[in-house]
Image (cartoon, rainbow, N blue to C red; front, side, top):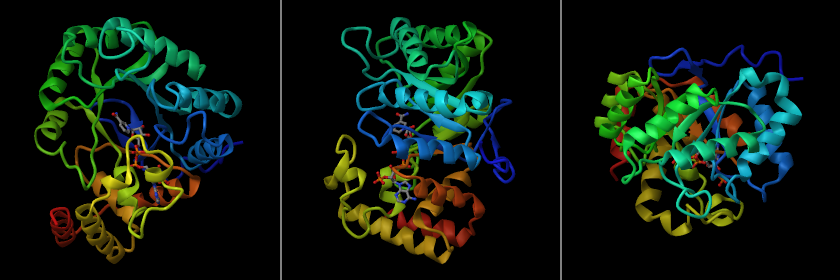
Length: 327
Ligand SMILES: NC(=O)c1ccc[n+]([C@@H]2O[C@H](COP(=O)([O-])OP(=O)(O)OC[C@H]3O[C@@H](n4cnc5c(N)ncnc54)[C@H](OP(=O)(O)O)[C@@H]3O)[C@@H](O)[C@H]2O)c1
């Protein structure tokens, strides 16, 4: 039985100009849910998150390893533990990065996007995802075709809402217009956004606000760097050691360490951990709906959730943070 108090204190936030609310902290399954992951730990992270009011779980076709592994893991947990609660959950997945061999296994063709969605639904053991994303812009496929495929996903009842990820401001606006022509609102954008990577600020943020598109920031902790994971060396159980696909020790440079140390001091003066302040700072951006954090254990999610207890920053704190990010 899930906790009866799970909705008592979570400050859900409206996603752009839509009817959908998301939790401020959502859980991403990019790492730690593939075939090699401990199934007991994976299940604990999902069911305890649900118990704490986290309603949104984010996937992509290729999350694993192997590709599809994370969807299979979540499908099993949904079936065994959460079948009765499917309508309390927002499950998202994506198509666009390399998934299977041959010319239809990636990018933005109608052929890839719709076949990938069918595969995702089979692995997840559900009839419909709540949000279906184009995972990356395809420089060779007409945007009309990719957005047409997203529209088909909605019209065929296989997705409730659609989003884009890793699109720049201009393509996002074009995508929103194409979808609008189909009577569909572009719900959400998923960019990388954290204290060490502020690229969405400016043109993309303006476009999202003017189009009424929500924003869910991925890698809010810079894969663990902004959780202070590497402040005292490189732990053996960390992503940089255990899974070297996207974060390696060489990425943790002296400059990043200097910035992270300065940020950790500001967090400590606010009585927050660095992870909590990094998340709180994102939640204080007016265009951000939710942050999409990852985790390797429940205690990290619990710590990150407490970020919502203080998302107010003084001007002096904001200035100190801006300065720390330029060291
Ligand atoms: N759309 C896209 O192209 C795209 C790309 C990347 C990610 N994403 C999405 O964003 C999600 C999150 O990405 P991410 O995993 O890189 O996010 P992240 O939140 O920046 O990093 C998560 C990692 O930080 C460490 N961590 C988290 N909380 C911690 C805490 N309180 N204390 C200490 N360490 C902590 C853990 O690493 P350890 O393993 O070292 O413990 C955890 O696996 C993904 O799952 C996915 O859904 C989307």
